[in-house]
Image 1 (tube, one colour):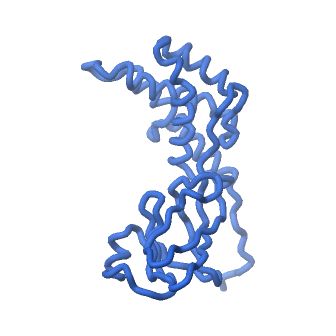
Image 2 (image 1 turned 135 degrees about the vertical axis):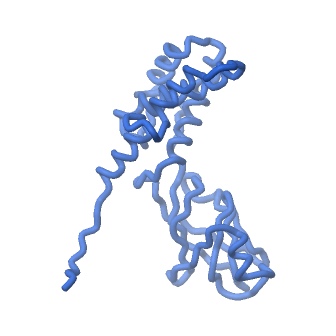
Image 3 (image 1 turned 90 degrees about the vertical axis):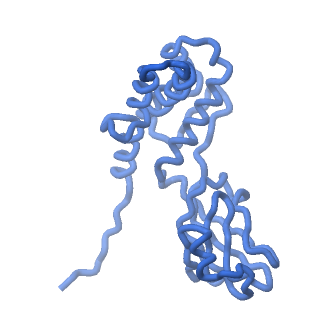
Length: 217
């Protein structure tokens, strides 16, 4: 589905013209949200970032394709793996001063900021394996091609309708019936037929599995 087809169906569902001018922005929000929930293999990228002199952190916002916030591997300039800490606090536990000099031994990701220890005396190039953001739509003829076409309706029609209904029913005292209905069809992990559940299934079916030639005796 292209953006015009998606927005037309959303309008048919919500029947609220006050949101017509915002639908395209909500569609793009939905695309980014779907990309944040799953790891789409074809969005993996390898990029480099340089450390900063006398500084323990560097921004990853300049990575090609836009950094999604998902970092999987970091290697030093010699290709050796660098330990990725779950958070900055744990990195600080091992490097309390955060000003130790030397080759980079560990990193921690906080948002789009990569903290590292130790701090090299000269700039060092780190190689990162990460996920880029899915491509958003800027024209009515464009489609969310990072996602399988058979899931466009559930993910982006019903997903965007969920976002809109959540605002329409903001003052509803009882349960948000329409909001819940659209969420059930789009992003509810408890619905085995929702768009996000089917996307996970699709990724599982299309993922290549490694075949080992090593046999256990």
